[in-house]
Image 1 (tube, one colour):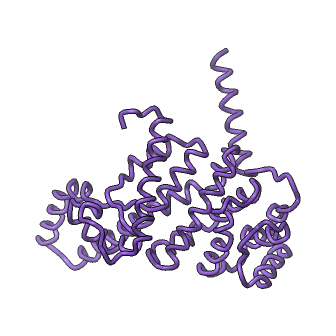
Image 2 (tube, one colour; image 1 turned 30 degrees about the horizontal axis):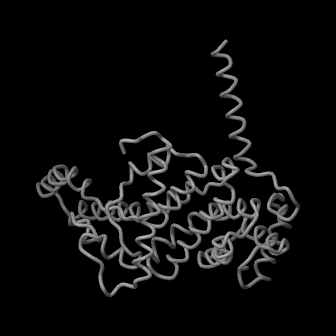
Image 3 (cartoon, helix red, strand yellow; image 1 turned 90 degrees about the vertical axis):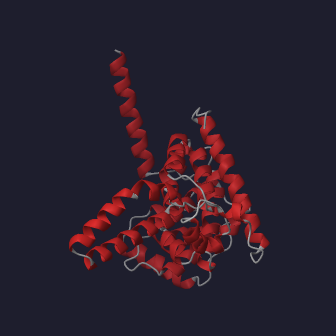
Length: 313
């Protein structure tokens, strides 16, 4: 009898999960109904026309008509995807609106879906323009998504099914992933240039240093880490957050502008950025932002460990 009840409970849980994946939230108004329209040629044409008509991304979504046009444009599949710069500008347009606490639950949930829909674009810009205008804009979008998730805290399933946790996970590890891909390409190139005994000696040398290099691998703390922990807590995904922190330990903290250059040297030294001291030429605002990111991340991580009852950590 207990086994039968457990099976019925599992089936019910699976059905609820599937329902959340297919329809994250039931809108309470018709303001954003356009996002649920079928992806037919007429809807695509209307979205393209709306995007062309509004050359400047909206800075607020308080107006229902503006919100309707905004989400119609972003959540409609286009035959030709817009350039990354255009997508980023649309996502960043209302960032300050969400950072200021604006937006209803429905609007915030729709924004989370928009950010997750264009995760590939955000990761591409974050890696290519780290520390520049584009990279800082991606950070603003991620923080706006974190505040939007806070407005949805009474709907954990909405946050979980929006895809924002997976998106922030990719952003938090995008530099690490890009570095690994670069190393693999470099190793492949070297192997092609070598032959015979020299190649065997290099393979043996690499095998002997695998453990050491993996321990010395630098992972930088970014604002994406802090927003990821926040969204995991809001969605109730404590175990995932704990597993992520264990798989991606942080041993480097510093302003985003200097992080790429410093990561190369830090990977060859056991001393961290903070241990070496702050470069006096850095912007104090950037240094303060790095400190805030550090405090926020480990504050949320402490909440995660308490929620998982990992008190030893």
